[in-house]
Amino acid sequence: MRESAKRIAARTAVRIAAREIGRGLYTGFMESQPYRFNSYEEIDLEKTVENMLGKTFLDYEDIHVFKRTEKYVPAVLLVDCSLSMFGFKISAAALTAASLSLCLNKYSVIGFNHNAWIIASIDKEEPPIKVCEKILDVSAGGFTNIAEALELGIQELGKERPIEKIGILITDGEVTAGKNPFPYVSKYDHLHVLGLPSAQTWICSKLAKMGNGRFQLITNLEQVCNAIKNLLS
Image (cartoon, rainbow, N blue to C red; front, side):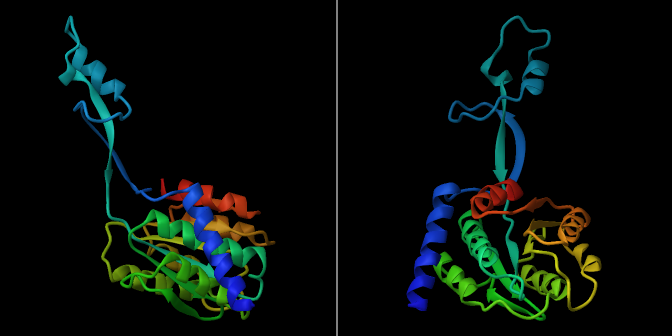
């Protein structure tokens, strides 16, 4: 019964993520380009007006639009599996993993309590449902060693040599083991943090600020998918 419940929960997480996010959400940057009649991007008003100066009529080649240029950016998800991560919190972690798997072509998932370990390696493709099952299979326990998780995350990202090193940490911020995590934050270009309710929410916020990332407090499952979209947009 436990195995059946776990599979149902994993499928549900992926189904919710697919409905709320859908495939094809890519990180990238906006670039101003001439309009080519084959798209509906937002008009770059400043560049278009600049091209119109001194002219009586507007030519099509004067119109510029913003086009999103995709960039290959894998990410690593760091999931707190310590004693305080039970019930709603571990469900939020599974839904986060499902959402991330639908957003990115390459990602890694790392679990941690007093030690850190690889749940899904960045160089091995695993179905989102399988990843969710692995997270839900973890028995919450032990202390919280965020520093070791951050260090292992960098090692995983190093396998791909990405343009930017992006980490997403989901935790309640209760640091109870390992080294001070703050010095490890600088190894990331962007460290986003999904904070779960606790007395140490300020630690989550500070980690995100020091990591040039965004902080989102998650108090219910309905907030998870939108949080991932906000972090990766």
